[in-house]
Image (cartoon, rainbow, N blue to C red; front, top):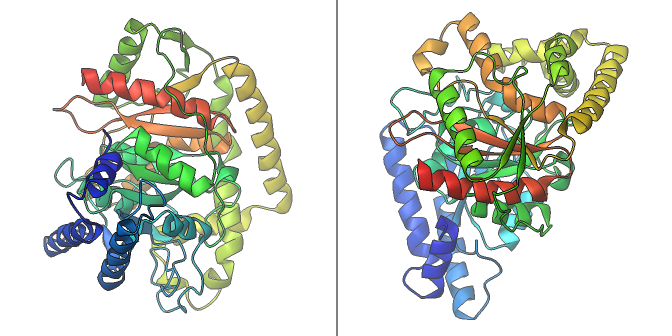
Length: 446
């Protein structure tokens, strides 16, 4: 039984209440913050408790809108919540007027009965795969001392990993859900970008942004995806025997940490023994991505369009200098350059369809390395090199307009490693079907 299902069952049987669950989460948050933890930027305890009491009353009268009803959920700091400031992890926007309306996905969570606990920390404006934030601190993974949680949805991941929420609402532009899932021993699902509405979400790059959740299981991610997207997909587990799983060495297996390489090879071996067909394929065109995105790519171009009013004005000093540096690269990308990148993207999407063929899913390491130590990121050169390597594999799927889920695949005594089960646009259902089966296999053997 998954975590959400277990809590829902306990609520249904009267063995606990929403108020008790929310109180427990708030106590965990208080202890985390007292110990210097930085997962949450702000916590709305009074509103959460009031909502929990209302949920308990509704349940007593027979109204239970979903399995998530009465359960605490965290919200990344770039989603509008009515009455709260949407700062996107920045100081720049910290004094802006509160949102007048909920983001569509927040509205859907409320309608499902979720209890919103507070706003989670993130890389400023979601522009880093490391979760680095000089304004609110950099969250660390609970899985190892002194190592980062990954980003940009860093606080969302830590909130779930430490039991301070049953799920964390996040976004993924180049890996911002899957990276922290991999670094924090969680499951994170990035859906096809167009499936979940972005209205009320502070954008980074609208061509690449998508909304999803981090949780403790595939089933819980599926539940959250149904709520956020408003779609019920066929996600019944696919039999492992006969599954066609595609793997490429091109780019995504370069520079792998030894722990990541061993976990990935072990996962492929387990799948082959379970009857899945592992088909290696060549995808040399992936080596063209550094050239295509050399000037900063779609992310820098679209981020610059959204931030130039501030970076060209008198508020530029409010930015994390590392974020400002990356956004400013977009100023040099002309309209013609931007259209060229979009054309290259469509070309590689077509190539990917051909390369994938009839495969049920594409497997790759979520991140090439285990969580880096925070102390090793103080130097700018080390930061940017590490950030590029951490984002490399996940950003491939965003550029190809795909969908992907990251699963823990390390052994109990190893640092956390994520296995990505990926597909192209619109293949969300198949990715989730395959992910259910692979998750069960890995949990039996790790």
